[in-house]
Amino acid sequence: MLALNFLSALVLMLSPFVLFPVCQELRADGTRMKCFDSGIFITVIAVLILIVLALSFLFNKFPNLSLSFASVLAFACWFVPEKFIGLCGNPQHACRAITMPYVGVFAALIVLLSFTGLIFNFIGGKD
Image (tube, rainbow, N blue to C red; front, side):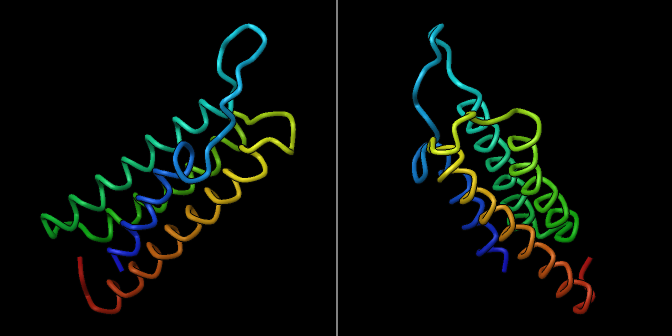
């Protein structure tokens, strides 16, 4: 279960700039658009998820805490860019049409896998 969660976080990390790139266009003043900032945020949070899951696996400590933390971070990967940072105004641009739907899928997958792992840990009597 942890391996699937780790793989989902890895795909989430690669989503904004490698697999499903956000818009690379510049504004009229030469600065990056908000979707680029959202892509940076998603990548950083996905790296944090990977670190939390890797530390939990390597040290075999606090699996429930790490799964809970991973699910909160995964939700933030979708929620913060969508509601706070923002995306392009054009719904046909890559960030709205391609990147964010896939980010939502992989974030939901991480949350689902984390909750499933928490349930199995609870049933199994793990920390």
